Amino acid sequence: MLWIFPLFPATPKLGPVYQKITHFVPMEFPLLIIVPALFLDVLRPKMAVWKKWTQAAAAGAIFLLTFVAAQWPFAAFLVSPGSANWFFGTKYFAYFASPNGYDVRHLFFPLERSAGRFWTIMAEALVLAALSSRLGLACGEWLRKIRR
Image (cartoon, rainbow, N blue to C red; front, side, top):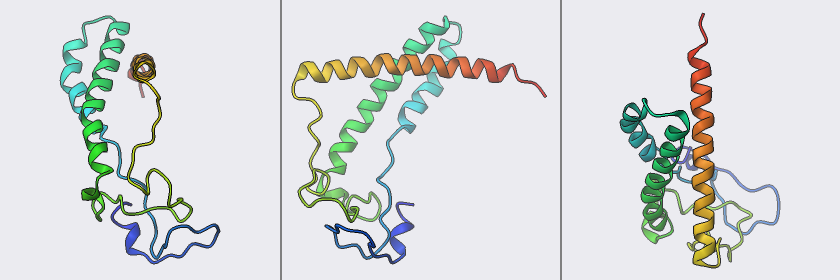
């Protein structure tokens, strides 16, 4: 969609219109989830003999670490002027995007106010990654039992 939508003309029909729109506005460039997926594919067979909760904790940690390692520098690139092209699509903004918005000005949104808050958010992300990994493992076990 990122490469196809801008090929079609469009005009905004609702207000307020802050951005000059002449073509369809695509969604943003996707997250780099492929990086953690590749790491998990390689390491999953080695973790198969572990207990399920240990597997989930390790998979959650691997996912979070590899995702942050890949996405963080890529996000820094996406807010730079070098990504404002047809391939990465950071030059497209919704008609209602304020000219003073962080994305329009190519700035990061300040989510946390301190290093302590940042690490709290990362710890929460690690716990949620482990829990969702365990849920995924449980769903996979259930699906494996389904027979025709």
